[in-house]
Image 1 (tube, rainbow, N blue to C red):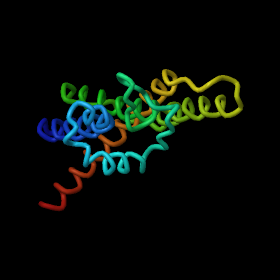
Image 2: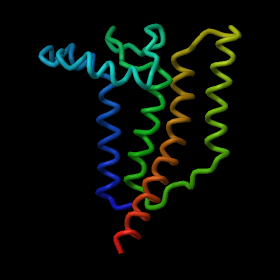
Image 3: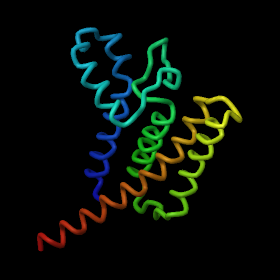
Image 4: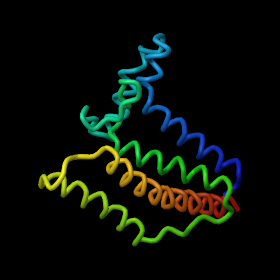
Length: 153
């Protein structure tokens, strides 16, 4: 993938990631409060936003839970790494299944009350999953560009 596309992808993910801190941004720039309900609704479509599972920064909640924050951060980190690597790791189904299984085991152990919900564990499991998910997303984009290139010939 060309560097300009990689950079655009990184910027897009960075903007999405910064969106989860919009409530914090509004706290510092109150004139933006008009947009808060819309931004909050956008993130509610992808996250349950249970208040006890949200990460707080200076007593202000992020707009998604700690697991979703980890997923987005994993994607962000991998998109940043992709800027400096010519050939990314080939996504394999076993990586996806392992990272998904880790999340499912964590959720299961919490639901059967074996241990309490941990924002740190949720963030870490989300980070692993988001990192692997980015590899699939990246590969899909490369395939899409190849397909579009072939059709334009």
